[in-house]
Picture 1: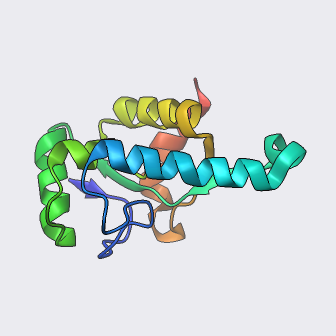
Picture 2 (picture 1 turned 45 degrees about the vertical axis):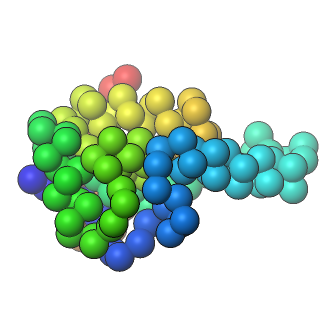
Length: 131
């Protein structure tokens, strides 16, 4: 398994009180609405960024379970992890598809990856650029 982000205790898009995918989606949607309202007419010019957790692994459920254990999360299921806006697990094609879907859903178009991991992110960048 290739993990392309720091293992941290908390994900900024997963507040402690949110334990299911629907709640996380609704919370993020509310935050984005707040940004949209504050930006007004400037909103189309804003580039929304995200620091993703990228895990190259074919067995998505197993990788999600391992991420739960590594981060010490409780009350979170593998399905919840797979639905988190900032977590991308799968093959290069699956992750590219997830990024495109979340861009359409949430507006994220700018992903920040550590410079130490650029060589690992390069195949994903190439895949997305080819689409």
